[in-house]
Image (cartoon, rainbow, N blue to C red; front, side, top):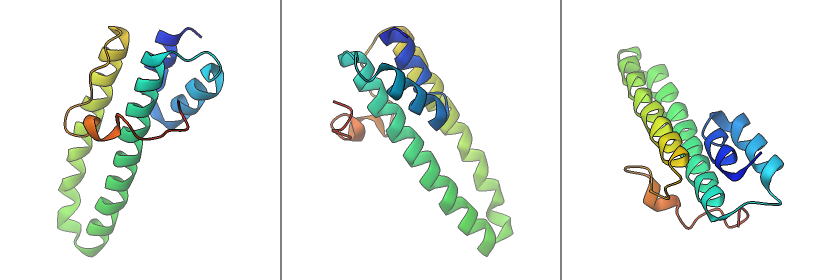
Length: 107
């Protein structure tokens, strides 16, 4: 895979991130590393949010409507894919700036 493809695939679930990281880890450029960090951060935030929502729904089923906020994570994923396709190193809205310098194992 070339670096642009690695950047795009990294946003497609955590399995896509693992494939992108393992296949391209030897020849990553700055763009790929940036998008791997952004997509991993997005996956972690979405996972934690899902756990919190499930706990809240177990306490009060009325709060099940909060699950619709998951659409925001889908929108962030699409924005990340668009940025990767355009070869831009733009952070994701709201959470992207936090993950720009995290995950040092990526590079």
